[in-house]
Image (tube, rainbow, N blue to C red; front, side, top):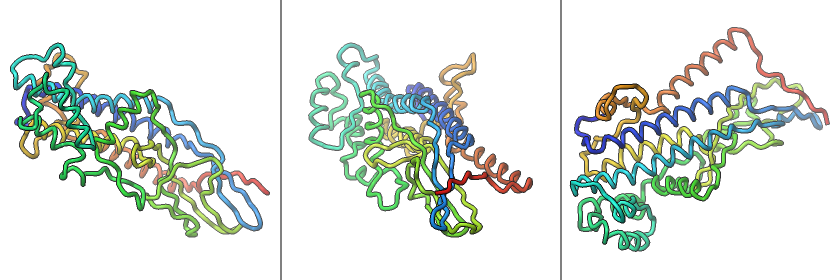
Length: 332
């Protein structure tokens, strides 16, 4: 972490370090699931045509939803924690009683609703008034502000209008968890490639895989190689698309650590919270853990490793002369 990051915010590095741990667990589980060959394909022949059909899909481990919920709660709480720490630093004393209970980082995409919620907070937290530095910075981060309206999360779907502002997406995930609505996971197909050109689904056209879905079609007897790349997907609020949870969490984590909290704290450009902190070693102080933090995110670290593992597996398969998975034929 940059030496210019204020010491009174070190505890935020620990909370976000836990998000990185959760992201690593999620990535490991997703990759293990994909490596387990979760899709069972069958070939159906009809009128001289051969159709490759999804026959069975393994269920996604339910712990993925729990881990993702935990990570979302940590990210949302880090914004509230940051606000409390900044107010306490300004006052030189801990918040207690009604002021402590009232302190929360507001997220609204409607300015009138934001101002109404702020009005109720100001008697206990005058630091959040629009003519105060901290209050103005929280206001400028809101999705309805001009500079924030163009800040949208990336979308994988071709033709999608927007992916939703980072704070709105984070809030929607958090609200779903509060209302005990489980995060919806499914299995998507990131890419289907066929040497005959029968199927060619690009990354931006990812969709949820369903039993009975046709993957490819060709003439019976034609030589064809079909590559199916399944991934574990999460249903994103607002956009409603299926997105890989690791990439989704990484984008939200980076927004909070590199933009939202530094801007809320009024820090210079380029100063951010570290993604990875040692939370398990004994005998280290909070300051020591923050000072020795790593600068790479779990999504990056594991992405490189998984890419190498996939490349190695493909190389070994070619070296052995594997011809691929044998697909049972269903005559009709």
